[in-house]
Image 1: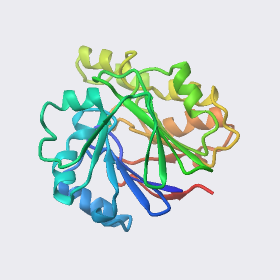
Image 2 (image 1 turned 90 degrees about the vertical axis):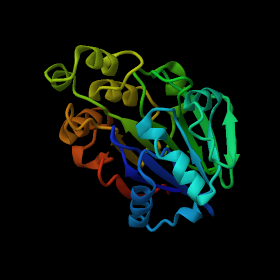
Image 3 (image 1 turned 120 degrees about the vertical axis):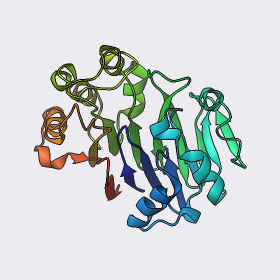
Image 4 (image 1 turned 180 degrees about the vertical axis):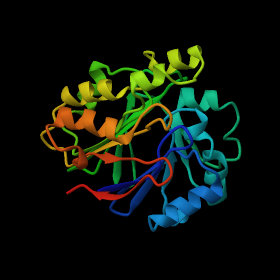
Length: 255
């Protein structure tokens, strides 16, 4: 199994997971043209994708899905709540598969286990992907950890983990007070220290990759995120990867 990122942050998200002959795109917050360009950088033809999964209805995750899936005839998978919250935006998609946030399913060679998370959306989920031997956890867009999140992510072989903001930078930013409260709240986004605490609570014995994701351009710095996660892992900061907004990250193999 391997994975790569098209971009991560409030301006658009996309992650590709591959196992055997199956490739899945998780979220698409970019235009069709931009998505095709970002896929091409990783050697991926849109037609080679088996499906598009959606974590929740916010524009940086769902915004590009309707046109991209319709253009290339791709089925879309999302929770019943996310489908309802999409409010007709997916009417041009030929195949829609709605699932319950607690029910695992399989797409080709990839087992998909949704994880319900606390976030200000209708029925948001994150995912663990497996191939029968290895597991990749994707966890962005949540305001706090839960025992269920810890249970699901423990023992993963790779982890893409939200490090959205530094509290001091957020507090000193020019964001409106309501937006600051939303971001830092229990249904908002993980701060660096909260992500590190979550990571420290997991069984980390199998981890081959840890990537800090969904960093705020205004309210975080890559070196802050790296330092926080490295402290939890007991490794040097340069071992921790960063999912960049503009370039994502290249393919990572899980052995």
